Image (cartoon, rainbow, N blue to C red; front, side, top):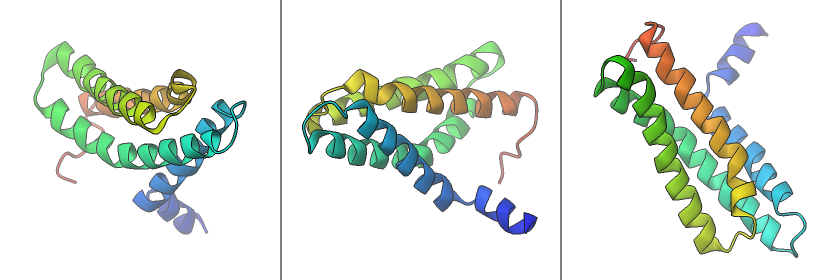
Length: 132
């Protein structure tokens, strides 16, 4: 049973599906006071964006982290990933008519930036093999 659980926890499909459900659900909740279908559209848009950003974030950190050294290596990759994610989230939510953009993106952006910072920091400690 532990091997199956470990397999699920390391599955990219599970991570993407979880990002879609969790962050899409958050967006629905953040926009719940607006008439339908606005909360539903915000949820689907954020869920889709979170799923795609989950795939993008690891690759972006891998690439950016290899381009810097010293203290800038610890700060710039997660900062650039956060700025890039913010720009995408704001632009697409604006285009889709999400009423509560800041509330909608606050949690997903916090989670993704925290993940990016921790993942990036783990490289400085030698906990990841870059060739994987």
